[in-house]
Image 1 (cartoon, rainbow, N blue to C red):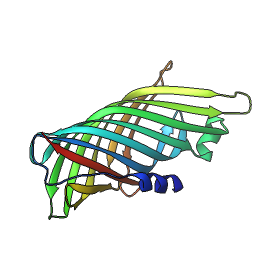
Image 2: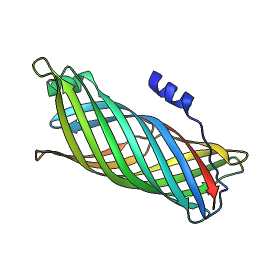
Image 3: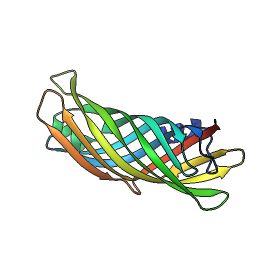
Length: 202
């Protein structure tokens, strides 16, 4: 949680719900989420921290399409480590993809929007045990998800975006093995995300 507070404290940015079409959207998010997954027969409870910048184009008054990258780090909990035979470990995930966003203004100050996104992902899980100094598993695959959010508008196209979770399907295949992992994560109430962005008129 201290890391989340630190991330939020250093984040700044701009956004607008009144942006016109034919504008460029530049922004980024930082966030925290809690998920539970099965990995190779072991059950993982992950507390994750992520950072995801994006660049998009608003092609209509309420519609935006964007490219996005995301970097996530999750520390494995004690029960997961014990089942894997490790004494320490973490998972780092890199994603390259995009999303389509639809924005619905509610007032001059507030708007809500929904994002449907997906793309490619790679996960690297590292662990340590008593006999082997370094164990590493690599997996790659794809993901697709939907995330609603609230936007708070400030003057001069300045604002903040907030989300408390979404729904996501993720598929990963461990390299060099036949092990596959498919999960559906519903993180409403178990995630917190703060985002920033700015529209630049063309």
